[in-house]
Length: 330
Image (cartoon, rainbow, N blue to C red; front, side):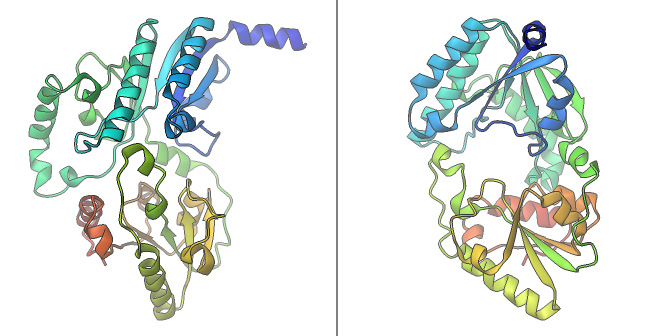
C-alpha cells in the first residue's frame, strides 16, 4: 500500500509555491484556491522569510536551483512581494532584486507562473479620485515600460483576480486572468461555530502596527511609540461609556507571548477574526483587510486613528476607508 501511494504521488503534477510563510490549511486566504488541487497536484513549498531576514539569499537560490533540477514543475505560484515605487532605501532595493532573481530563475526552466490579486481599498476608490482611475491605469501601464527591470510589474502567465476591481491592478499585457470569488467571501461563507452569540461585545481588529512583520523587508522605521497606550485608553473609555465588552481579534503575525499593554488588559483571540466579527455588535478598525468581514456580516464600523497614524503612510488608507463608508474617523 505504501509503495502504491508513493508511486501515485510521483504521477501527480507538481506545483512550486514560493512565499514568505508556508500556506496553512484554512488559515490562509489562498488555501481556498489551492485545496481543490490537492488530488491532482503535489505542492512543493519554499519559504524565503528566514533566508531574507538572516541575509542568506544565496543559500535560498541554491535550494531553489536544486528543486528546479530535481523536479518537473508544472506551475509556479509566485507569492513574492510586488515592488513599491515609493520605497527607495537600499535594503528594500536589495530585497526587490532578490525577488526578481527568483522569478527570472524559475522562468529559465520554462515553467508557467501564477500570481494572486487581493485588491485593497485605496484613495482611487473614493471621490474625487475614483473619476481619475482610468487615467491612473493608463499611466501605470505606460510607466511599466520605462521602469528598471526589478521594479516592473512581474512577468507572469496567469493572474487569479478576486473582487470587481482586481483586473485594474494588472499593468501588463499578455496575462491570462482567472476570475475567482473573493477569498474573504469564501472564508466568511464557511460554517463556523458560533462564539457565545448571546454575549454582547465589540471587536477591535488588531493590526500589530508597532511590531509589523514587514518592517525588516521594507526597512521602514514606524514611530508608533504611544500607539498601544492610545488604543488602550480609547477602548477603556468606550467600554465604560457603553457598558459593553471589547474583544481584540489578534493580527495573525502578532506574537502573543510578547507582552504589551493590550495583551495585559484585554482578551486577545488569534485565528478567529471571522467568527469574532460575525458574532460582534460592532467592529472597531483602522484600515485592516478584515473590514471585509464586517461588510459581509452587516456590522456597524468605527474607524480609529491616532496622531502617529496620521503622520505615517497609514493616513491615506484610513482616510479612504472612512470616506468610502461615509464615516467620520475618530
